[in-house]
Image 1 (cartoon, rainbow, N blue to C red):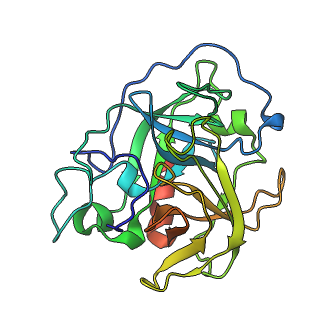
Image 2: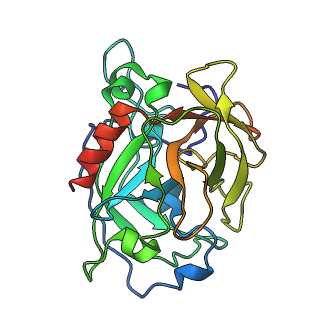
Image 3: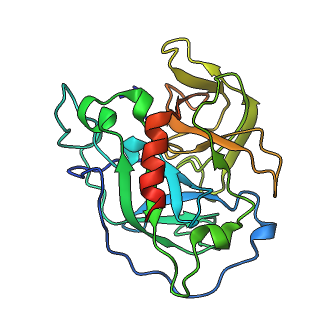
Length: 263
């Protein structure tokens, strides 16, 4: 695992596909058009900020992307890991897009139950950083709406499986409360490139990506509504808040996405 993992915690004893139990909060949704990054939010465990995640464009509108280390322990020598990198159990998973506010914060676009988690066995057996990505299937809300319908069909980035490393990317994440008491997303648009220490990984140099930003989407060529860009990876780690890495999506990532999209 990367030495500077930026998730708050990861799950112990989880298989590649896991069902969880969750009750959606009541109430309506705020106007997504006034939110800067409606597709990006907090991956929650037992109601607490865990990592960052984002909605990915999909036929049923039910797929969310995050880092594998946020939802599964790293394997070693071909054997599944027994505990997460910090030894904590994850609890019940949910996704809160556009999360914001001090303290417990608010969820302007609701809280969405995670139905299943899809992780590559390169991660769960070998702890391969180049497979540090996961796709989650989320349940519709009580009225049958998908999470993508609520955050905006034209807002979610389309996944890309054959991207190069040198791209203009927008990276958006949620640092944990110590560095981000108002729970506001931090964002940076910059050039990505090969990581010097591990050329198979993507790298950016942007400040503010503290613990809690693991799973942040790396969106290439983002313009805005109707032109949301391509999701080419998610934040994996980094030695400081300035240095961040991501695993570039590949054919194995596509297979996970397709499993998640089937619901």
